[in-house]
Image (cartoon, rainbow, N blue to C red; front, side, top):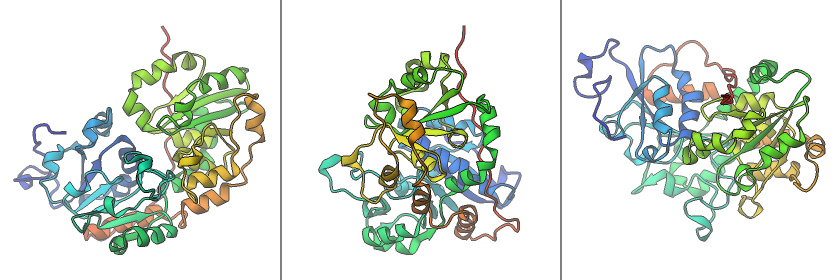
Length: 404
């Protein structure tokens, strides 16, 4: 965003404009939709109810090129500072959920993953391709510039990531804090709301909800077989079943909301529950009876909370050994499109759930407290007396059919 600078709560003479003075200022960096949803949903709420803290948002240089990112941030109702202006201000804390544009931020950066864990399930970077050396993530190239470690704190989900960081970028090891996974914690806390989420989706008690979960790129479940939604609806067409679709935010950003809805128009009219990228995917997974997925994070979270998973696609030659995706694959069968779908879904088990959850976080249930403690340490501010809560996830609101 390169628009006109705003007269907000930061910058020259800000003390003459504000009503609540003396606040620590926090910048939320949004380089793309996925980073925004993770920070705004799971991290920023930990700063609620504190009049000593002022939060502002900025869509970074990278974010300007992703469709819908700025619109999403503006829908949150916070102050959106042009990135050029944000890079001229010294913040007390910078929240990031991606490596993009970190070198331009001014202030102590708390770096978090925007998916399941800091270690990639892919062997090869999407940008460098298969000609590059495979790496697991947390690389020196991502974490440093000109010999300087960029984050002041790296929020890790698992003790195993400490080992990976020690190997890939030992000079950043002193910044590591094992905080756990706030997304998995919130999903686990929300399991008792399953019936409410099903009600919000319009799924009756006697019905079975099948959710198709897809990451992005051609080797994803949606990219490799866009007709699978139609096949699920056709083969599960009687009144006992409902079908939902959860797509990675990048599918929406690259193709646009209109195009996604256009591709799925007949399916939506036939009852497909399409979950928008802003929120609702977690509640939908909780509400599900079966998940058809791929190597993406949503499928991994589904497996971790005990949902029976069948994989519609899986790029074996590009999945890292020991990754979350490979761990899911060890217990999740591949879908055979030449055979009836329902028996394959019903035969899928949940035997790998504990293994996936244990690899996803080594500190279950602690992320909210650990994240808030780290943020206040970086701001050099005493934490509020009230304990940091693990809040249940919001209910799902699927896209409405466009009936004439």
